[in-house]
Length: 254
Image 1 (cartoon, rainbow, N blue to C red):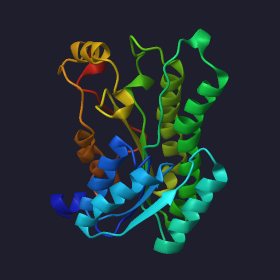
Image 2: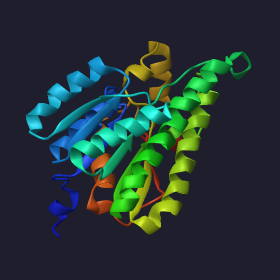
Image 3: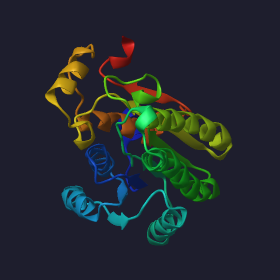
């Protein structure tokens, strides 16, 4: 197999959750451009439909699936619909995620639950539902979007719930990788640093501080994660599992 062939995804069937968001959108583009058919999963139908229209340039199949990843039945029904349409799922990218800033002593229980449910529980439910078909097919690639926040405590913003949820995603990734390796399923995660998306839009003061504390002195662009997801989704990473790839412009070095 040539190096070029190692990265090709022609006719692969992929799911991307959080497909309507900034990072999710770019990952959908990357997978589709490399030849995969992509099922978009998000709670925001309007955003997904925009992404689906953009993907038309690659002439690959696209499905739009509105679903709440925190609801087990909704996840299972969505996976069943995709399997009915396409017959198999080769790649799962769990990108659905939210953040919430609040001092721990003031955080409302419902805000804690919402972050943990979307970021951690949602990732688990999607992995569980998709893995059943991957186990039956004896192959699969699962990529979870964690965060550098699972390794360090961000500041100045207080976000203990988000940090805990992303640390959980990284450990969930390792745990599932160990369980499913015997089924020829790889499970890896990507931990971005500060990426310029709707989630990180805040005051200029905060953005300037983040840049100052980053060796490269800038925020990342969502498109800069495209190459990593292709590597993890393709045969080029077939010996890698249980790994968390940090892409943070050097933030965690200091």
